[in-house]
Image (cartoon, rainbow, N blue to C red):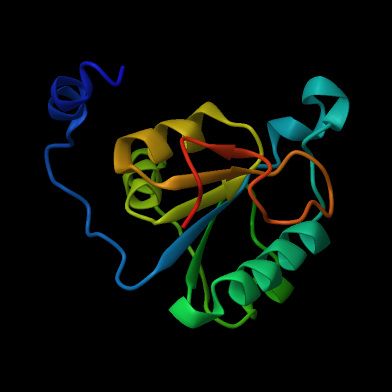
Amino acid sequence: MQKHRIELLRLFRPVREPEKPSGFTIALHARRGDYREWAGGKYYFSWDDYRGWIREARKRWVDRSPRILVFSDEIVPGEIRNEAGVEVTGGTAGQDLFRMAGCEVILGPPSSFSDWAAWYGGAGRLRLEEARQELKARGVVGGEAP
C-alpha cells in the first residue's frame, strides 16, 4: 500500500473533500455496538474508560490544547459530552471516516475503520487494547503518535 499510496489516495478521494478539523485534533473512536459480543467483549470498554482516555489525552498534549472529536456507534452520554474540549460527531459513516482522517491522532480499539482513517490521513494511531491502558507508545500503529 505504501508503494502505491499516491494512486490509492487519488482513487479513494471523496467527491467533496470534508472540512479538516481546526487546531490539534484527536479522534476518539468509541466503538461499542458490535464489540459488546465480538471476541468475548475484549474491546468493549466502558464510558468511564473512554472518559479516562479523554482526560489523559488532554494532559499528554496539554501544550497543544487538543480538541477531541468523539466518533461512536452509540449515543454518547452527557458525562463525555460535557468534558472540556470534547465534540461529539454526528455524520454519516463516510463523513466520519474522512473527518477522522483529518485528525492528528486517532485513539480507539482495534478497528479497520480507524486504521483506514489513520492511513488515509497520515495520523498517529494509538490502539486501545485493554481497559485503563495508558496512552503511550504501546499500541501505536504507523509510527509514533505526535
